[in-house]
Length: 385
Image 1: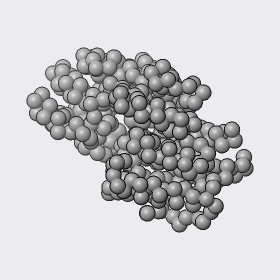
Image 2 (image 1 turned 180 degrees about the horizontal axis):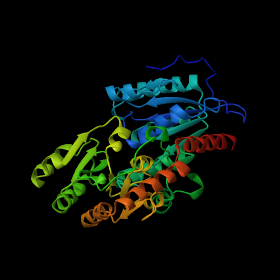
Image 3 (image 1 turned 45 degrees about the vertical axis):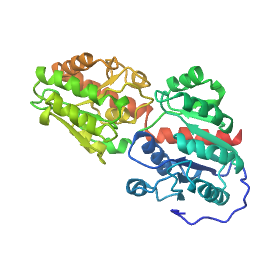
Image 4 (image 1 turned 45 degrees about the horizontal axis):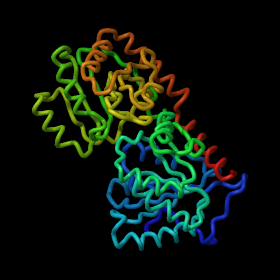
């Protein structure tokens, strides 16, 4: 067992926190990475007020170098080394986890992703953890019949399901049969300090950069962006496209890149640690996804004051007000994306105005401090109830 801090020896049965005591929250996820959900979790761990919330972190696997490097140093961390729930090591990991929980005495277990949820939720009930919270921040585009069945089996072990958009809550209610009073909406937040003193975009330059921050997965529609780029470059030779992110679709996209003959006008940058630095070089920021919950990348685009183009999915049209903070286009429509780019190139003042409006909106509605206060209030209310 690996832990970031020494554990206190405490009674084995969890004791609910009083209103005046810090609430003990254990977060559990498969592993850490620089993807959106993991980034939001790390932000919570690093920003929650320790006088109000005492955090701990369980990684179902977490043995890879990147996950280890991202571990927070301000709370206890345990890696279980479980890569398959059907492995022989899973039973031993369950015993280690119950020991960890006896020492930490969490009032709440907050679960992310499928394997951590399937492993952690039943075990939490056996360990008498008072409240179990599951996070579901997407619209369920990936759900198979097996996942729907397992989700129904898991539901009695979960007190509250969190999502970050009203659309996500409605999808859980309409398509998966969740009770409305057991689904809560807590919106994401962005670290505004990373985006201070950014200049507004200038789409009148001789070289205009179009950027996208996304994992290379089919739902992010980077292949559609590449086809749109091919069309746009024929009309607007000043453009350069860059994508910051990596993932399972990398080889397929590299083959498409060659087939379309995009050359050095479209770059797959791979994983980028400094997203703010990447966005500083971008004038137009695009989110071409087929499906989203509340996109962290979109909030970062807006905090950076970029001229934003996003598809009409998930929370995108709620966060980006069309023709005020940016442009909203139909998903999967490459011609619409090219036309939107053309609008921003043809009217540089409008593009800069979108960037300024987007930045103000994020500062007012979606700061990281505001997000953490929402979670703190939620945790204390859940324990008090």
